[in-house]
Length: 272
Image (cartoon, rainbow, N blue to C red; front, side):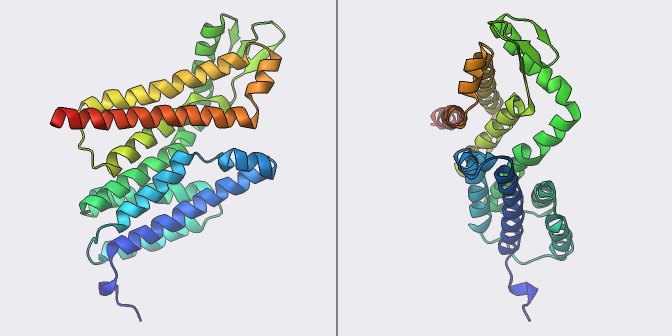
């Protein structure tokens, strides 16, 4: 029989995180394979951003990097409840379990430094994987219309709801959930959280500006991409292909990582 006194809290929390993240990611991968061909799903990284994969690894690594003491009674009460959430055949509940565990660690767990930083990163993972989807489901009409307004402004064509007329007047471009800027903005937030916590960055008021800059950059790139799709049907087909989606992901990844690193470097310059 294993004595709870000999089990480290970091090991317990990391195990829960690994199970929850693995279950949530597997659900997304299976859904991607069912929606696309194997090859297209693989090219699209199974609809999971590389930022999410890296953030999960960094978060769990930080949780494991520092001993957090012995397991508490509250940990033993919470753990079975989280496992029940993870066991449900719904991928979203696994990310909800990650969010609950992170909030518990941050506000009730008296975490050590690395454990706290890991919990922040993994809580940020739930923004694109869970919370942004909840927000989108509640306000989809308004979110898509915001994108459509900017796309219509760039193209200079008529807009009706989430429909924007092609420049060549051959039809209308529908701004669908997959084209929304919300998902990309949530990934920018995750990238900032991952880079800053991994680098032991101390929060400053200027961080708000750097974070907003990262979010604004991916919003602009997404609006420009959708606007190019609205030039004509041929442009739409070309830019809606898997290779074009991969190229877009690389551009956005480069932008948010560069801005996040610039923000941290700016902080170190000020400190020196």
